[in-house]
Length: 239
Image (cartoon, rainbow, N blue to C red; front, side, top):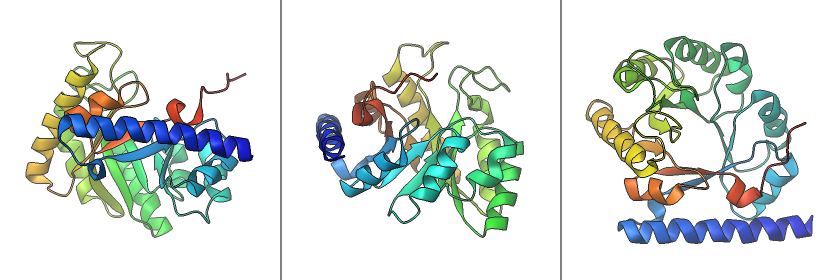
């Protein structure tokens, strides 16, 4: 376990250096960017080690993995982010541990999350996931609402009991006009964020960028980056 702790600490230090360098290049303060470590497929013991070395935000994308892990790590001073596509039948479970749901992409999900949050007597932060590859009125292959649906969905979140509209999230698209153009994609998300803040000033969180493209996300103005492999190592192959 000592070896694993040292490995994680070394990886985390490298990622921190990358974020700091990207911030310096963009003329931003390091404090403007929050690192979220994506712990999917890794055990609760890794979450505990990450907490020991200073990580305060972790993310999961599947409730069946996240729920037991969050329960096992309930004593730790960390915030849990849910970043995967979320089915409504998993909402009650997710609402019991997630501090932020970053993948809100349809009205039905907002309604279910609101009901679950009120039942659990919790306030859950929500990000509207934007699919930059989606046609008008559609959802993207990786989840997310089409850009022309942002305002309506954001308004629904803002009005929902138990929910807090925190901002926007995107995943760099694999298809469409922004495929292979991560920085352009993230800059477009920032434009949507500026528009959203005109009506919802507190919704200033912008989650974008992962291990391979965090520099582009920081350059574009992202407030949060989601990094898994660069901290935890190459994920084990699922059987």
